[in-house]
Length: 374
Image 1 (cartoon, helix red, strand yellow):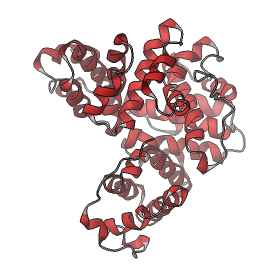
Image 2 (cartoon, one colour):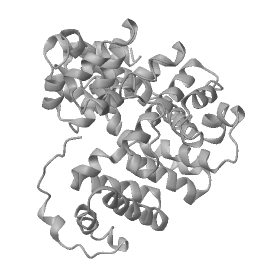
Image 3 (cartoon, one colour):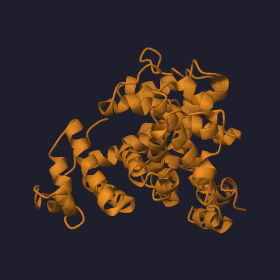
Image 4 (cartoon, helix red, strand yellow):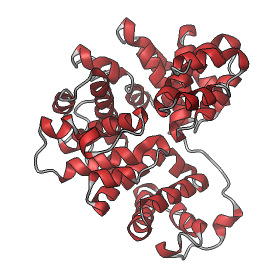
């Protein structure tokens, strides 16, 4: 991704000599010590500091430190989801109980901590069988507080299966099929396909698991998997497309148009999600990039972006703020997209209603309908 140039606050320049133990008292000294490094060394520097805080002060304080580092260093913000995954994996090792580690996570940075816990759990098993998958999100991990928490468990399950199975997509999908409902299975499939791409994007953390991606066919493996997996595949595939097109967004829209007709809009939504992350949720830049494709693509792109605005910190107000900035013809779908995420974020109807009432008056209704809050 393009490097975002910023001038860090003067407070970052206090000192670069602090030890990890100084993180709580002098947060910016930790940031500047890592900020001066580059590439994998920089990543490992931040990871070591986060690990130290987790082991000495607990996962909650480590996640707070990650928020602080992300606020001070744009490169950490861009990779905050993988950092959260790393904290989740480390948390499982620390607590030695998947349910306890999961319960200490928070839904920041696209809920990456939850996903990492599942990765750590599956790494710890000598053998994974369908019975380990079928009742994990419910029996071993309490996901009753919300449908959103249940989704994060299932999505993380897909990530964990991929890592355990050395990124063999068909084998991971087959284990997802042990889950009881279509909704559960789809959430797990999404984790599989996301991990398939993430493993290559962050290959400095390990081997380049590129067997199930193909630069000559940017839509692969969506073009090769069984039809029941394709929706979940195309909902993630734009990340691979952008990687192979060097973030040529116009070309990425063109590649999406090659998907099966009923899944083109899904690919456009996936691009919206990626554009949201690429611009670090800059509404003006999102608006410009989402309109680089065909005329019919923009509304689907904004739907994906709006959902990502909400999911980044599990905050509907961020998505509603994007919807307010869009031209009138695009607002209806945007507010509906926010409502769809509100429906899984909040178990209580009153909470959903309160979130949607922050929308523009003319669009409160569509948000409430999508949020199942009428």
